[in-house]
Length: 558
Image 1 (cartoon, rainbow, N blue to C red):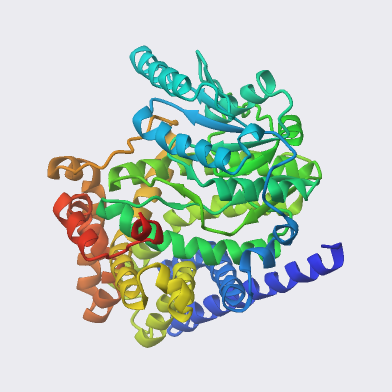
Image 2 (spheres, rainbow, N blue to C red):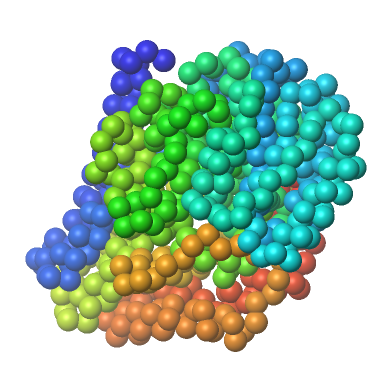
């Protein structure tokens, strides 16, 4: 797209974001200004000012995405024109399939890769791919088991069209980003592209060939990131979480791709990358304090954009999956890792040679987590304001409307995705029909209304402790379904529970209306422990599966 239409598109999107933000701020002021503004209300306004940019951006992305999803004949091609020119088939280029490993269960990792290679060979394209298993496993016993499993896998595929290679590093300098870059520097030869996969990634041959075809018709494209949906989950927690995440990402990514154009995201896996520009421009040096960049993918995207290369999102769901954390403790720990990584971006914003949109991407990643302490601040300030009589003149109806508007914007992506599926019968049919889909949407919204506040408190606690030494590295991840014991949940979530109880008591002492307005946000904190235990309970998980609640298309066709 030429610069003028692109500028107009981005300017119109910015105007939409500004309009939504102005509406949110106006509704808040309309509720807080009567009777004067107390000290606590100034703190509330500070929190609203800090969280409104993300809320407005979220709502704007969702609205634009929903319009495209409902009106475009082919929504992914509408935001990625190269898709219309691509002709998947036998690629001209060679592509490395790079799978990063660290203390993984190879019995879960290798079968999906075997199916992918088989399908590529059936499509007469196996000779254009090479599989590389890149290990950062440090435990010697696990490394031996890993090598044995991969050795058996390689022997079984001996003589097939797609060669299999295995390399294990003796140290994991730079974590996954260092693993990938070392592979590119030391092992890549004539490969033009490489496909990045995590150990839990599952991709179809059709999706892979489509990505290669898009790259081949787009000589200036450095990264093409496909949407990633959750693999069919048996446990209640990932089942409910990824049902809403999927709907939200479909609308969000479509809207974002419409205005970001060549300044798109990279999420670190289930994406295809052009070797030469990535190897030249995406090397990540240590930060000034000597630490390594944890959330590497967004920085790598910004680096190649700054060098003049394009990064695009392919907002299509089919053929691209990952496994989500099996229970709440793993999810919260993953969130902390992401939060620690995203907060490092503050150091990078000062560096030269980033584009304006590249800096905006880093700011968005910061806002995703930085809003958590502000939300907790608003809840605390509102309770103290009421207890000190500062909210006596607040019109409760106006306050309720302001709170609801912020809630709508926060949940706008998944609400847009749900609306699309319920409006378009063919989309709902892939989920088992509108009734089945609606049951899943309602169950997910109910669960996430409880979970989001306690997740927000968890982010806030972690970020507040981060400057004082709280750290979380890229530890091996538990990917197996498991129950959570009550004692373990209590040890993990007692601070969240106490915060919820204290806030609820504070609002109850103010007034019944104040309590009713607060309960949707504090009840999840109070119930943090039972939510953690029950969302991992095998019986509840089985009950959801039997009734097809939060079922996905892949589960129905399995």
